[in-house]
Image (tube, rainbow, N blue to C red; front, top):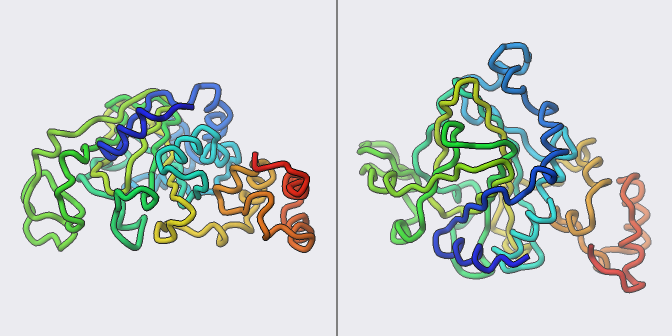
Length: 310
């Protein structure tokens, strides 16, 4: 896959929008299992799904965290094309998934319209960098069509914001005095006028830097529902890029199911050492066979025979 133009756009603007990056076929198995996580549009709006109340009044209540009840959706977070895109944007073959969420939004559930902001405050203990090898990338992945009426994210090019300091982090549209040091007191209506909409069909991927100003927008489509994922990657060496540690969830059935179906390359993105790494010894292989009974350890056992990471 040639990502040269994509990388240039991401480096220039701080984001790139890739309509239909994942095909309908590539999404199909994950989409079929969405109701394991969320109500359908009908179930929510007709009030027939008992989970409906969870989504009311809080824009973040629709988030489920990785690994998901659906193994197919978990596997989508480390889909081969997603990993290839992350490697290209970060310029590194050894990348780690440091955050993954699925998100459902429903028209009328709450106000999803946000102010322009950057995500770095809960994605790194430092501040964003544009230095090669020191960057992180977030991606929104649409699981259904997201026209403007279903609240796509809006983003502002880095060419308009590169001179803005690391603090404040939120930029209101109008003046707001006394909001705290992370919120700009001066309105920035000009940046809202410069927004680019991320609207696109199912399978669209929006890749952006945690230092890119963006915001969620409101849902207006009658009986609307929007399903998406957010996946976040960093080079393995970028230890300051943090959101969650997978070990705390690695004893769950969902994690064990995911490990049993993921490829060595997908597991490497979750922090597993690749085949041939010194970690893999008869001792650790025996232990892994007990911890993950459905994990095929052949690639790791065969590494000494010359078989590589797949």
